[in-house]
Length: 81
Image 1 (cartoon, rainbow, N blue to C red):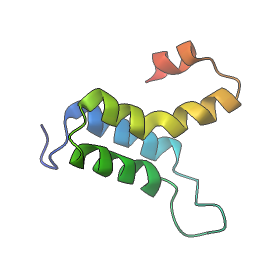
Image 2 (image 1 turned 120 degrees about the vertical axis):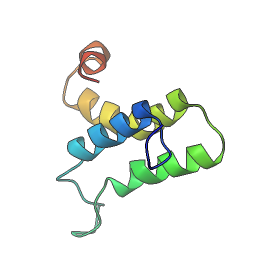
Image 3 (image 1 turned 90 degrees about the vertical axis):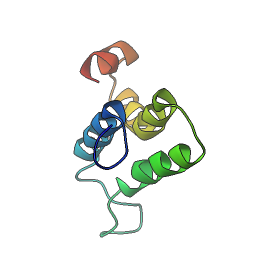
Image 4 (image 1 turned 135 degrees about the vertical axis):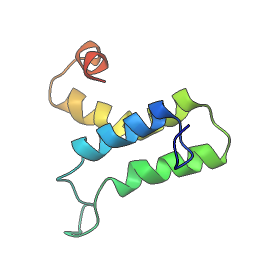
C-alpha cells in the first residue's frame, strides 16, 4: 500500500485514467477536469469497502467506453492496461 492509502493496482489505474482524461473537461465547463469523476468513483467505492478489482473497474470504466467508441476491442484495451 502506498502513502496515500491506495494499493498499487488502484494507483496505477488512477494514473492511467489521469493520463487518458488529461485533455477532457466536464460538458458545459471549460475548467473542471473530467478526471475528477473517476477519482471520486474511487473514493466512493473505497469508502463502501469494495475490493481493489472493483475500485479499478470503477476508475477505468470511462476509459473502456472511450476506447470502444474509438473502435478498439476489449482485448486491445486489456493489453494496454
